[in-house]
Length: 390
Image (cartoon, rainbow, N blue to C red; front, side, top):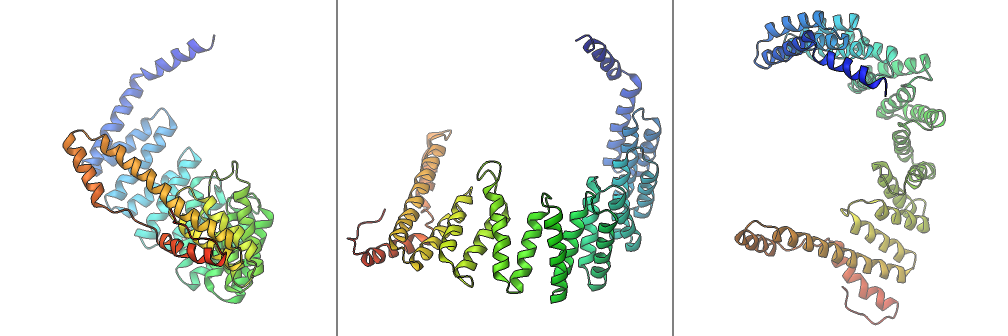
């Protein structure tokens, strides 16, 4: 407590410092000049503000703004040179990397100086792999590699070099993934196999990296192309395991989860022919959904698998589940629509709201009539007395 009052006094003194207040006022006035289109004057004032800033971070931001104004005024060469100067003498490393990133983007996309830009992106990745700018630089390098076969081979070699220079760095797993992605795009069997080597190394050496789910999905894509369906299924099941072991069951779902379950259903209904596992993963799909967009579609898939397995009673129950689910969803939507209309500001608006609702028939999922037709068919096979469906 005895430190609180002196600290508050210091903060109050800083807040009232006339020099700081004047600097802030000048900064915001300069910003207005920039917005007003007085670019040359704004650049000059930002440069002065950089020199007069008491806080080095404020000076760096003013320097970046001077460069930004030049870029917005289409003075790309001057802006790139300006950013490079900040990248050279900026006080904060993050600011230096941001400045170098902006300079490189101008040189690549506006000045057609690709070689210089590629060198800058490589420098960012090597010098500051922990900065946000490094991920952006990596993205640019990868996109350059997508352009043509020559660029692709060049970036493949570059990612390999960067990986071996720093195999324990922040970007090591990203180099492996991006290199594999470029090799997969070549389309040849040899390139695919080289991609698999990189992916296996990533999955083995960096099991907790955020890139692992993407590596798994690319891995399965390549295996699928090569017809290695059993190996593909093994990796897809690893993806499903990450859903099962999330912090709280079903607390989050990645797109990879639903893709993996869908693909496993296809594999086990088709080339791997294991209907029990097909039904298991088909059941995963409705459980994974936090919204009902494809719920009835997935339930109908379960009906088909259960019928294939000869589990007619289960198929009948799932058909009933489709109808019950849609009916409950429709009832909830009707209650919500009624609540909205009841909250109308005037009786006239309320009447118009209910009239509009009555004019629009509910959308019935295509699986509803399919389930309705399937129920008596299954009942007949089970020698049950047909009853009206909900």
